[in-house]
Image (cartoon, rainbow, N blue to C red):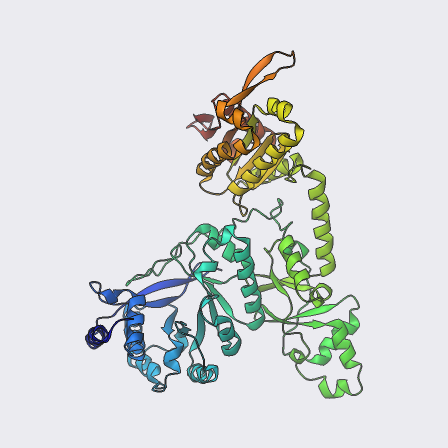
Length: 596
């Protein structure tokens, strides 16, 4: 904590900064992930570029330390609003406000509205974004302050959900229009199952509370793809646009479906969408009597989704509605009332792109009623249909039986049939990929000397390392049999990961050899004729083919090319990678480029 003279100096510098209007505004775009258009901008603040107070962290911490946080908060609002209007930016302005300023004793209602009136900006275009830098204690007072803003037309957002002091309680207490997921849970999302589950849970809560979710910190195409597949409608981050004083008004996002987990018919054979059943819907204002008649006249109808503006808001259950109307005088008393009073306001709502395995975990971990009632399926939050727990369990059982039938019993990795189907599917969809064929060198003599149990352990090590090197969201790892494996890479940087894998394999294999053999780099063992032969330690060879779907007709051709590349790799001493690249010349003929 700075000493008193230092605090006085800091206070003086801040006062000069505020009085001199030395704050500047930056704007970072927030994208609609359904169409790639600008939804709005978050206004950010900076101090003078040549000052310690240039950083917003230093700026706000210093203001808080000297008791100037409310004054700084107001100055930031003035600066950002003026710059937003001067830039004539489209969409909404997300305006950061500290909750502690809203609950301060000297808080003056109406001052933000006065600023907007002076520059001609409607409050309906402004979202008050709560940035929690300090714990919130008086929730009732904060709710009153935000109610004041809502009555004037503002919307409310909670920033950095999952980080800070009490953001989940803020969500429950304040019922915001938007929540922004903290960037920690978004960055690395594609390779972290726990983060994906957290984000899916947030999206599930949001769908059931009419809250819109913004994913912050999107920095890669992979993160954008996963966020969209989860169903989140809005995104923000460097991959979308960096904070700028004069920000872009036109985004160039790749919103193509890069999901390789879907069925090879272009449909959704391994996702919730494969369970989709078209079910009649009703509006929340539909008469309850009409709903009762629908159930009475359709014995096969077990549930009715309640949909408003193409978004599901509840579920009407057959047994509950019919039991309710079986009571005396219910038709007369309640028949003309809206059906929203009879609906379950929190049904299970899932995105069509959710995998069946994850859906199964969600259903079995949630309330038992979801298995009986079924679930609503959406695409980017819009109603698509329904699925039943019975169909989910049947599909999961079929997947498990199929996986067990074709999996390698030693590594449990997919065997030849799934590998061939995966290759043919990628070719049919016109998706480029790299097939890497992995083969252990000098494995047979190792098996003879050390025994089959040790050989199996070395094979299992190889399978484990391949799974570690692959991107689980985009790549496919298969076990052909014996000591042969394949990886179908669709993720970037596969060659660097293969090179690192070979180095790692050379280190980890030593645990499977005697110290004397490690020291000499090999060992003597008799061949089939009983003559001693020198054998080097087991190494790993990789033959890779960069597959252009236009140049290959089937998995047979891809496999033949990969096998040829593997043979080239095995000619090199030690663990090695050989890459074959094919392209088309000016006459349309295929040419082959080789790289060691």
